[in-house]
Image (cartoon, rainbow, N blue to C red; front, side):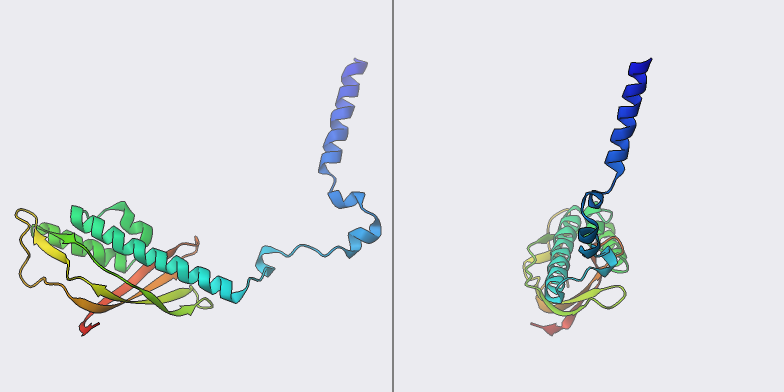
Length: 188
């Protein structure tokens, strides 16, 4: 019986020691003079570092959007899961409808799309934060063709045109492309 009581006392002592803050071992003076750790909402990062991180994340999302769109278009799959990894509405719905429309008309996208995007604006103080992207999309090797015979759909020729997109940071931290326009009247 006594051995059991000693084990319980030792366990209780271990629990008390484990729960005691480490600063309790320091002298009173050390404990008072140590600066308190900053709370997460008080932490400040270098604005340039934050800006560069936002630019990189936005460009990664843009590159992912183009790749996912090419893959989904080649498979004629408007519900391809990779689309929602990089896109948000209203652009996600527009891309899905475009792929579905091509599929319903027996067409699909094929070929190579060339891109060289640049960031034109970063607004991290906006709610939500956004990054504006500009690109000169080269679609000369990216065609809408009939799925049966791979012949080009008339009037679907490519070219080099200015394209703009907006990447938005969502509450979960992801940057997604939610708007984009190809300016066919502005060759580049």
